[in-house]
Image (cartoon, rainbow, N blue to C red):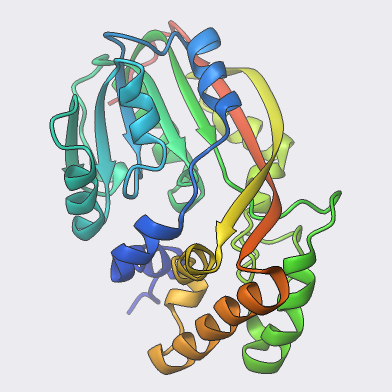
Length: 283
């Protein structure tokens, strides 16, 4: 019997606490959407395919431009919340793993993935994105990295001893060499520029035209911070009693040491890749 895929198991957890995901996950800096408008043509009438929208942290900004969005979400629970959050908007939500989704070939102008690309097999995702896009369409992938090793992060420093005491397996530096940094929710995967560009360009369907890392500051009340940590997959994987104790400590720390409002340094690496006009078959 084949061992379960740990990535597939972990990505299936996000729908286990939809309220935390909706309340805690921040949006993305304005610079992301400025780039999508100026370089990828995002705006009225543009057909967007969004991968892994969650409860709409990026989706709302996409539809606000007048774009028509089809969002592919693995979790039925998150998809239901997304629909409820954006009732009446130009949005279609499909419940599916992206690698199993079958778009009409060439039916989209822009494919986006906000903090979701690392959860999918890169080769299949590139191929599916290329299939969905018209020639010269755009693929934009970006992440929220909840930390920045070049700026002070007092909350991270204060939280680390709590994790060492209660859940030492969640203790990680902001930047590390593996796929995730569980304790912080960081994704160094998105910062590995050479690897990400190689993934996007490997099959010949895309050329990366722009990459940058956007620094920004997250601001959270104590309940929002609790909800954000509650939405991280390693925390969702904890037994509920241990998870609740740890989340209580997060909220207590934010209230007692930070006056109920925490500011943290974040990063958003973004990659913009243009679909070639290659005639290579996609099926």
